[in-house]
Amino acid sequence: MARIGYARVSTKSQNDDSQVDELTAYGCDKIFVDHGVSGKLSSRPELDKALAYLREGDEFVITRLSRAMRSLHHLLDLVNGTKAGGYQDGLKARGIGLVVLKQGIDTTTPQGRLTFHLLAALDEFQREIIVENTHEGLAAARARGRTGGRKPKLTAAQIKHARQLYAEGGKTVAEIAGLLGVSRQTVYRALEPEAVAR
Image (cartoon, rainbow, N blue to C red; front, side, top):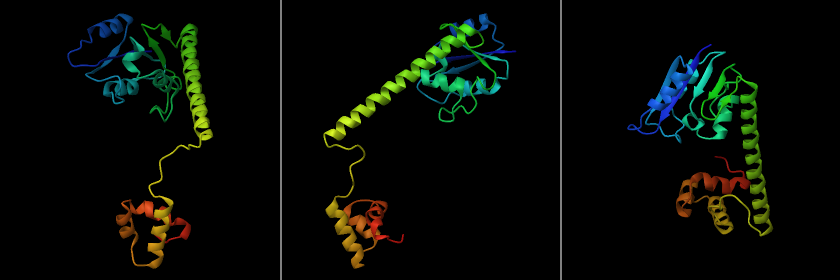
């Protein structure tokens, strides 16, 4: 079993000494450090290297969640693994423990797993509230006669005019699009009920 540490500093001038010292004191065998990388950026080369270096039975060690994760959702993706989050196989599936020194999370212990599951439950609860609020907002908008989505690029009169021009055969789709100030695809969509061959 190896302990693999990861540290990140946001700016070139920021010092990583305190993180590296804590990871070394914890007994990390190898430490990867990203310098000058913002927490908002998804591209962190050293984090990717650290994750690739880990093997079954290892521990992935960070000082604080904010050093490796952009959000709680990102943490859950990292541990549980999701294609959407960019982690096809999470730490859990690979048999790797996660240790977060400052927050007292250690998924190799029952207490650490409990803390992690509580965080996961809070994240799920937050997502459900957002979805519920979105649905309520959409229902209220529909009740007032508003529907979501993008405004149509062509009015009913413009669609009628485009069909008429096309039916007369004097204009190409590209010319009709130029006249109406839209793309050819928009004109094709307007002509679809006419079963126009593209």
